[in-house]
Image (cartoon, rainbow, N blue to C red):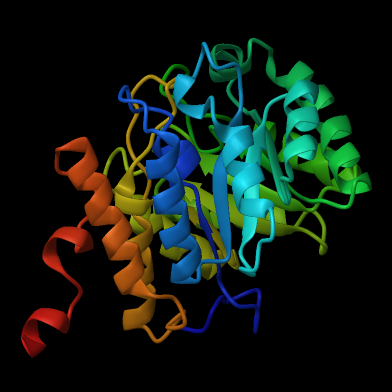
Amino acid sequence: MTDTARAGSKRLTLHEVGLRDGLQLESRVVPLEKKAAWLSGLLESGVDIIQVGSFVHPVKLPQMADTDELFRRFTAGKKSPAVLSGLVLNEKGLERGLACGVEMFCLGASASETHSRKNTGMGTDEAVARIIPAAKAALSAGKKVQVSVQSAFGCGFEGPVPEERVLKIARAYAEAGLFNISLADTAGHAHPAQVEHLFGAVLALDPAIECASHFHNTYGLGMANMFAAMRAGVAAHETSFAGLGGCPFTKVAAGNVATEDFVHALQLEGLRRDVSLDRLLEVARDAAKYFGRDLQGFVYKTGPIGIKAAA
């Protein structure tokens, strides 16, 4: 397989979201120093983008209370080429992110009305109307921006989400000049044929659009969906070390595809061999040790193909 069917020679982009999406569901708050150690390991692995945290109220998500400090620590004198991203839900989050050095802002709205209200306290239309000006303000500040459609493939509360609802949000983004669009499978309902079709429809809206994928592994289809997205021409993919994660505001929360599992699969096909799988495995194993349980990733437990054979 080449890097993508549609995107031609574009290199696959790896966006590691474990420190944000991975930790937001954990009841045990991870201390700053442990997060910093994991972030250092991720930077050393060679992934392209690392989502350091989200800018939300600490009472709602105490796991993210030190996001500002983590950004300040790692953007000061930064030498790594990796981009440090942060999730913001509103204008206040944008202000905080600009103040502490966020390099890429991730903003989104849910195609599910129910999920939108549980996640942000706003309906879908209101969320889109607030997200777009905030995203444009981040662009004006010289920052990279990614906008997303959450619950794009289905909702645990509402069931199937009409395709046109997703396309309406994506169209609004593109018309506002926001062309880096992620489709997030928040509930984990996606299946490969649906993934290829929906990403194809979004990419067809405007030739300037570049898509990213974000799949939860709720029903075990995450990896299959990622390869389906690649067939559709998606070059950027969001994953989480050890498969940590899940939205606390969806009905059935489950983790993401594990970063080390995805990198392992890519490297078996000759892709992204510049990334240190060993470093990713170290981070995943340390996370499992810290939480004291088996996490959703596979390769951190089995070891990569070829390692055991050579032992």
